[in-house]
Length: 346
Image 1 (spheres, rainbow, N blue to C red):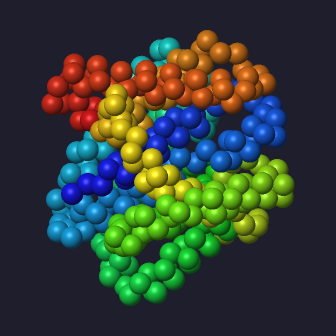
Image 2: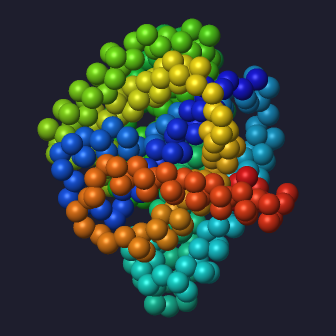
């Protein structure tokens, strides 16, 4: 049995990921816009949380490791490999500056080219969002470890979560998402939290419904404090996970954002999705993740970089990219038929 609020949560997560990427190529954001970006960026955190929720909700009760990995390999990893190959073949024909060359540098010899392409697959650098696939693949491989943790008494389980939370606050996310293992360390608290919420969904599903003002105030406070002390309006990142540079308060903020969205979706349950757009986005979520950056790049061809044009323009661009990517995904699904899941993950 699936829960409607968490299906909608998945749709919100992918929309926020696309919003985050739609902020390009604008810069020089005023303070109120930096605060807005601090509040809505980091949609990948929500994606990890909901992945942890559905891992427990769908798979744990009757878990078969081999079957689970095969299903995830077919659903996620094959599409990742296919799209990465297509990027490596076709993007050099239409782009002067390639993303993976900005990250790793150019390759002059055939052997250097082979090493470069190996890094592209290993680190997920065919497109900026593809870092998520090597990371989540490791999380899938670690499923037996998470199942063992979930069997702990609740106090011990909360203790493990808090430990992982502190590690994330001090370890930061990896610089340029360059290390899948670093990402595992950074995001594990959210994956585990999602599973814990699923484990206790009868108690927690409506727990925050009447606490939205307090949770929202906490989110806003943490955002303002982070902006004041670090003068950065995104999640903090660094190359060396062991180098202490302070605490990233947005790690806690994103936990609160997860609870806030659950509570808000519960509050708004009476609003019917007349267009079915949320249901469509949910079903196509992985294809939207795989494809949206192509649309973002095409749109950016017609936008001059420079000072931001305001929050409204960011939101309008996000709506366009979401709808255009959904239309593209539907077209490809119809064109490819049953093979579409191996190309676009849907």
